[in-house]
Length: 308
Image (cartoon, rainbow, N blue to C red; front, side):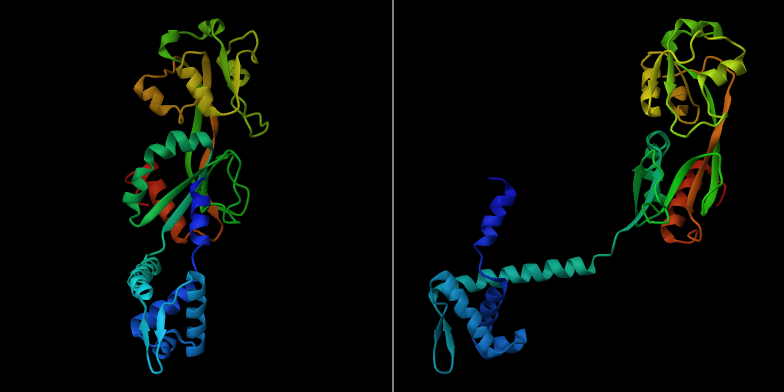
C-alpha cells in the first residue's frame, strides 16, 4: 500500500469536518446555543451535526439536560484533541495567508547557453535581486514571450524581428577546438582527425558556421566535410571534443571556460563570425519588475561596471 492509499483510507474514515467543528465548539462552550452563535448557524443545525457525529462514532458525546449539556467520558476525551487540531489548522492557514508571495523571474535560453553561461552565474541573481527567485528555462525552441511562457529570453540569431525589446549581449565567434591530447599544431593535421559537427536548427543562411565555410576561409581542402560525428546539441559536441574524439568547430563564447582551464585548446584559426546573442522581452514590458530583475542580473554579469 502506497502513501496515497494509506492517506485515503485514513481520511476516508474521518467524520465530516463540519460535524467535528460543531462538536469541538459545543464542547468548549458547553452550550449548543453559544456554539451556534460562534459558528453563525442555528442551534438546531449544531444539534443535528453532533447527532451525526455520535451516530458515526456509535457513542454519545453529550448528556442532554433540560437546560444544559454535559460531556460524556468519550466526549471529554475527544474534545481536547480536536481543539488542538483546529488550533494547529488555524495557525497553518494564517501563516499561509500572511506569507509573502514569491517573486519569480523566468529566463529562457538555449540548452547550451543555459548550461555554459547562465548556470555558473545563477547564484548571483539573488545577490543582485534580493527577494527574487530565478527560474531558468532551457530549450532550443523559442518560447512565446507574449503568452507569458517566460519573462524574457536570450535569443541567438541575426537580430531584429518580432515585437520584442532587445539588449544586444555579444557577437559570437567560431573556431576549431580540440583536446590538447590530440597535439594539433597546424591546419594540415586536421586530415588525420575526425571532424565533430553540430546540426544547426537555425536554417540555412550562408553565414551559418560550418566546416565547409571554415575550410574555404582557411584555404584548405578537407576530403569530406560531412565525415566524422554529428550532434544535434552543442553540449554533446563540446563533451566529445573534450574527450578527444575529434576536432569541433564551436562557439568560442560557449567553450570559454574549457579553453581557459586547458580542457580544450584553440590550436589555430581562422575564426568565423557567428550570430548575435540578445536579451529580449515583450515590447512594452521593459519596466515590468521581473524583466528589470533579469536585466539587472544580465547586465551585471555580462557588462560588469557598466552601471546599467
